[in-house]
Length: 280
Image: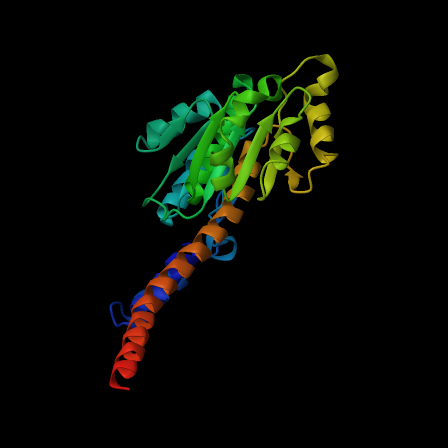
């Protein structure tokens, strides 16, 4: 159960739509599910805003199936990352309604579509970086943000990026995925006024050092709004960007709702003022 779901449950109780016994049944749900090879945290959504995510690399297919079953039984969104082909085949054989993205190496199941708030731009330097960028996109979308992809816009042809300055300016947070020398996050950071999450990739030749070169380049960026996650960690980049963007988007929505509520009152006040002036 996510924090917003808990809020809706308590508000439904306050309105008399559900009884106390129903609320107690939900709240008595154990915070963890003990499995043979895992302890699944089913209260993480309440604490952190999003359920536990399953990192599948190194896990046997049957272990992943049991973890996924636990999350689904708890009615929680289920996102699996770094999913090997054999794990995907086994999980889909058990839960055919899960969505498989072979490029991103993800599986996901949504009990209901997330309420979207905020905008994340995922900027991919080269086509070879696309698997990591796709992982970031799937993650940010699953958390509940609108995601806009810009692909193959690296610094070797910087004019390709400059065609999208409006899309960059509209984003609440930006994920920049780049290998080779890792210069792109600094360039993007100098064009926008929002957080930029750099994701170095292991794409490159010899002195690229399997991602250490772009990692160091991003860590030493002179653009003040650039933060960096681990090599090939599209999930972390997408997750952090989505958390930032959702908060901004939700506040923007609340302010818009407040403005709409105030408009009639302001209009009435103006009419009253004009009426008084007419009486005078």
